[in-house]
Image 1 (cartoon, rainbow, N blue to C red):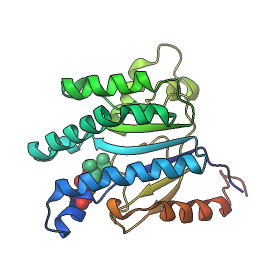
Image 2 (cartoon, protein in one colour; image 1 turned 90 degrees about the vertical axis):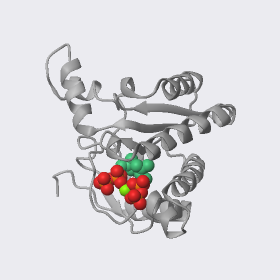
Image 3 (cartoon, rainbow, N blue to C red; image 1 turned 120 degrees about the vertical axis):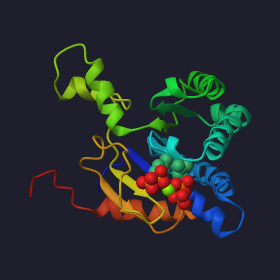
Length: 222
Ligand code: IPE
Ligand code: IPE
Ligand code: MG
């Protein structure tokens, strides 16, 4: 049986989900947050040490300003409201991405959340916000003070010393990585689902993990 340390999610399809119900794209984002909550809870139950969620890409700045503002407000309100229960549940929040360019308010909320949850041990939840894998790779190269080699390069990625995701799940029907963890996913098992993110459920995750556990992972061997 394959070990599982890290599951990564490209949560795509919120906008379509909301539009399909004639309630607008942002309604889908609201629902998407509920899915994240459910999946984190279930991941704790399964003893998965790390989960990563692609929240906002470096390319998502191309969206209408109104939607961007809504997304940031949504993240900020969520943490302002739920920080106590996040701390109590033992969840450690980690941010991956370029936080310098984020609006001041959300930056300070995220900073506070990371600080208050830093000692938690039940699960690490990575949130990729203003994240772009190509930027991450450049960031690492610029920051390497010592010799450029694999170990030093990986130490300077946003994911630092974390194990790479064994599983990547993308909802929403597209089979692409959209600039997410290009380096870290080099040997991951990829799962693409037609389902839109708000419809993704713990049972879907359970099924994927069951399949994953039985896969023969070769890493070049036979
Ligand atoms: C959520 O899905 C991803 C985020 C950027 C928050 P989308 O907003 O891309 O939804 P679709 O793909 O347009 O339906
Ligand atoms: C990927 O979804 C980014 C996030 C889930 C945050 P997008 O909807 O932005 O991806 P593309 O643009 O369709 O590839
Ligand atoms: Mg999308």
